[in-house]
Amino acid sequence: MIDEWRAGYLAQATEDAVPAVEEFILKQQGRLQGFAAATIKLSAEPTRASEIAFEEAEQAVSLLRFFSPANFHPQIVSYCALLGRQHIDSYKYLTVKDGKIDTYMSGTLDGSEPAWPLSTNKLAEIRAKGLDTLSDLLNKDKRSEFQEELLAALQLYSRSSLAKDIADRLVYTLVALESLFLKNSSEPIMDNISERMAFLAGSTVDERRAIISNVKKAYALRSSFVHHGQRIGVDDLATLQEFMLMAWRCLQALIQFAGDDNATKAQFLNLLEDRKLS
Image 1 (cartoon, rainbow, N blue to C red):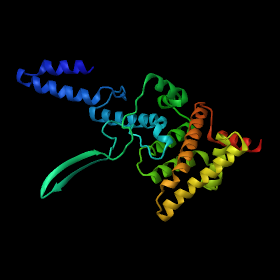
Image 2 (cartoon, one colour):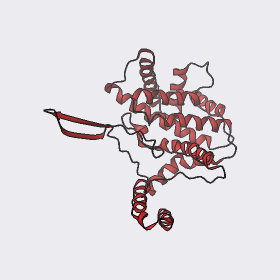
Image 3 (cartoon, helix red, strand yellow):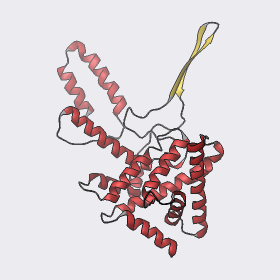
Image 4 (cartoon, rainbow, N blue to C red):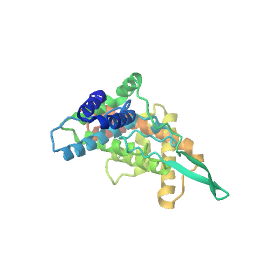
């Protein structure tokens, strides 16, 4: 496609403009080639078409980002975003010696890998873990209320992997979980969230106790940040990493459950209640 684009430009260019056209196409090719593409076919006025394309692509990429390795560690940031919206923080500075510029330094502040390689095997792996189910949900003309709630929660959750501040990541994750694991706004939040996650992801009494304890610690960290402005420190990373992995596992289980068009949030929560009583 890029070669055809190049040929079309060159066919219209004057002889003097050919070098500039070649340089332009090569520059764009270097920026685009090798990236995954979000595509859509639609009929619309050009400006509106691009707006719709960006909206749909943003939604699709946010769901793809659910499978990013950044969701499993509080210090790894995901740059799985639309090209130009990755927000990679960088630095540039000059050192001055005896009134003259001595050195110029530049680089990136984050050590996370900005590219996420999606090989055929990796793509097959994440498709089996729920990407195909999410893709089917996005393509549905009509989704159930539960499916809409799930997609909204996952898009909110996906912001956590983009956040560079650990506290922001924790807030996004907990809000996403609360939107799916609570029956209504009057329920006690921490106890119900921790118990329901425990009975969804834990298979033994010890595992469930450990999950409940970890979720409550995560809530305590959020409370310290939201209500008292306390930063989340290095000593809390192990707690957060354990919580992030558990949150991801619970949300992945919900993806599989919501693949059924007849499934409801009430059925899901009742299933967890039945496990508690069994």
